[in-house]
Amino acid sequence: MSRLALAFALVVVLADSAHGRSDAVPVSSAGEHVGEEVTIEGRVVSAHASPLATVLAFTPNFAGFTATILAADRPKFPNNFEQRYRDKLVRVTGVVTAYRGKPEMRLREPSQLQVVPAAGETPLPPGALPPEPSPPAPPPTPDPQAAETARALAALEDRVAAIETRLAAIEQALATLAARTAGPAPGTLHTGLTGPGVRALLGEPRGVIDTTDGGSIWEYASGRTVSFDSGGRVIAWTGF
Image 1 (cartoon, rainbow, N blue to C red):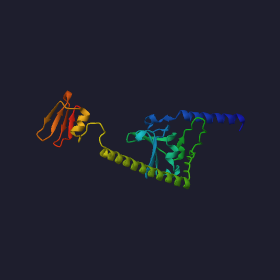
Image 2 (tube, rainbow, N blue to C red):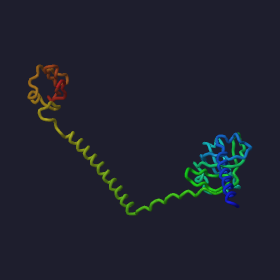
Image 3 (cartoon, helix red, strand yellow):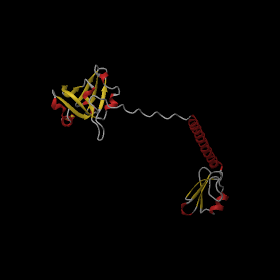
Image 4 (cartoon, one colour):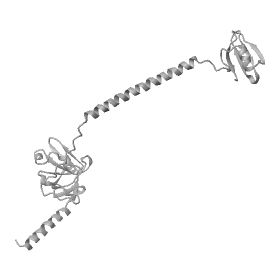
């Protein structure tokens, strides 16, 4: 073959390739090509595998166009199917049929399913499978010494928390005990104070009223009063 003929053949191949790309039908228009053999292009939303078939969905909830691989043809395709094709822009080539009012296509060979390369990527040859996804990095090996240190610190934190709880309870008990045992401050009016003590604090009352229970009420200016029980000790007061 001459160089001219070789160059011409290369031009034809490139033109056919470009023509094939331009002829790809968007997945939203798949329903307009029922009964035709076309190439549908769209992004795989999800994949569902069952004992009967594997279905690629191009719209959420399988509501639109789908590509189906029956169980008899499934061994021809890669095992980790969803990892290879989910969220990828792909092209499927075949006859569009209608099933329950929705367009679908049956895929019998891997060559019918091609991943559209991203910008800068080398296109895969016809029938080639996309590369295996990189396996996840193994989890780091736990350090026994670090784990033991973490357990010791956790135990220490628990003990400190328990001690703090006990100290808080002791402080509360001491405060309650102090409130019960502390007497009234000197020089203040309080229950149990006798008449001489009241006179020393407040002076002579303006008047004294005897009560029916044997006690008395001392009256002071501005409506202030001090009440005594029958034993002569203060039981209440008002206005002070």
